[in-house]
Image (tube, rainbow, N blue to C red; front, side, top):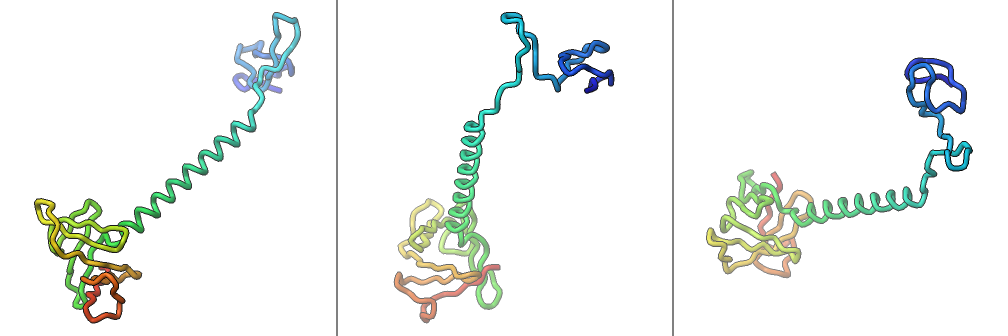
Amino acid sequence: MYCKNCGTELQSNVTFCPQCGAKNENNSYHFDMNNGQMTNSKKPINKKAIIAIVIVLIMIIGIAIGIGIYKSSNNSIVGSWVDSYGNVAVSFYEDGTCDGGRGPYYEAAENGTITFYDSYYYPYSKVYYYEVHGNKLYLSYYQDFTIEDENVTVLYRE
């Protein structure tokens, strides 16, 4: 074995290089003054602690992925939507504001409703029901609507 600092050949039981004084990192033994013997100074690896840390990290990553999936599905209407002529009909933003809707604010609920609010955050009386299928947003005043109904407004993701 050789000193990593100066290259001097070392004996296997040497803690410090006799030439430059650098610590020999490969040597894990030291002389114990209490009992007069060479002992191993390296601490054993705690495999249970490493396994526990890996499990916790996997759980944290899983929770982060789950939150990301929830947020992306919850904000599925965020973005600009155009009518069949290509004109922007409404744009929904992540901060709860919108352009082109019935008010400057909106709230999309998990039950498939969109409520528009005025500038004082007072809700308009009409609630829209919606479904998103791919790049299409279906809007209706009626809760039990089907996407083929005549009264359904279809908008397309820009």
